[in-house]
Every structure is written in C-alpha cells, then in structure tokens.
Length: 175
Image (cartoon, rainbow, N blue to C red; front, side, top):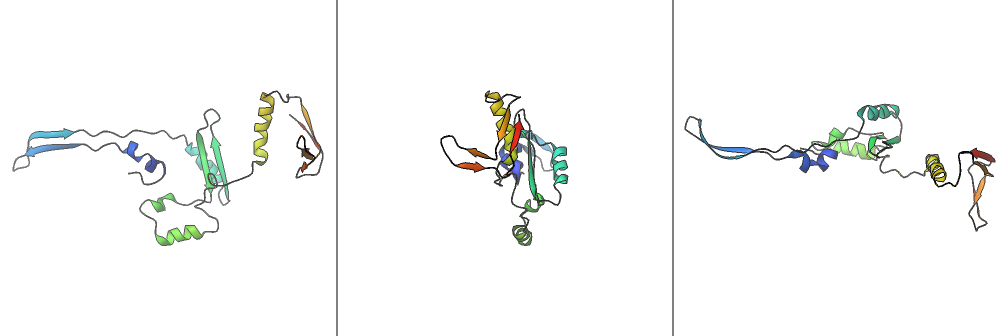
C-alpha cells in the first residue's frame, strides 16, 4: 500500500484488486466444489523518469550544503533528477513519525522539510540568459555575429529611467 509520494498518489491504479475463491468443503477440509470465483486483477505499472544514478550523484555533490538541482530531459521536459538539500529520511513518515522526530525536523535551522527545488523562489539571474539569446536568434533580432554594447545600464524605450547593471564596468558581449 502506497503511503507517501508517487506510490500514494497512484495507489488506486497501482494496487489492482484482490481476488477470491469461495468453495464448499467437507468435514475433513477437502474441497467438494467451487461456488464462486473472482480472479485478482494486477495493478497498473508506472514508469518514472528519475535517473537514479544521476539523482545519487547530485545528492553526493550537494552533501553538507543547502541547495537544489533539477535536471530536465531537453527532449520532453521529463524530470531526470530533483534534489533538495539538506533532506531527511522519508521512511520516518511511513509508519507515522514520532512527535520528537517531527519536532526535530520542524525546528532544524537548516529546514530539511523545505524543498528548495519546488518551494524556493529565486531570481532568474544568469540562468535565463541563454534562453533569451536563443529566442533573440530564433526571432532574427540578433545574428551569431552580433555584438551587444553594454554601457552598464539599460533605458526602457520611451523613458528616461536608467536600470543600472550590478557591475559598473562597460562591456561588449558577442552572441
């Protein structure tokens, strides 16, 4: 019986149905005849996209640190790995977590119950820049030989307000 996570979410589909056989027996326990039968039905299978080796590798890389890594398959966006650290032993919840264990997790200053991968809110920073560059190339706004001059600020068209870069140096960026 699925108690947590994927198994719990898909329990109805994974479980299937238990069958039975109703028989008539004599005083010695020997089957005389079968009265009714309901065959069991196997549950459905599900295929997870998590790459266990990759998941373990990332978990080892993040050991002792606070952080999150999510790896998606670029072909279909399926999740190959999703790690948030620090973490906790999920098995604590399987048979019901003790009050002491739960308080320990809740009061841990490293917040192991907080999934940095799914609950964290972070500014896009440099991770969004390749996507913007690809979009600009795709739309023909720039070409592979375009050089962008960066004076250290950007002015919204039709405005005099300057949005300053976090660095004060002037740079040129080649696409």
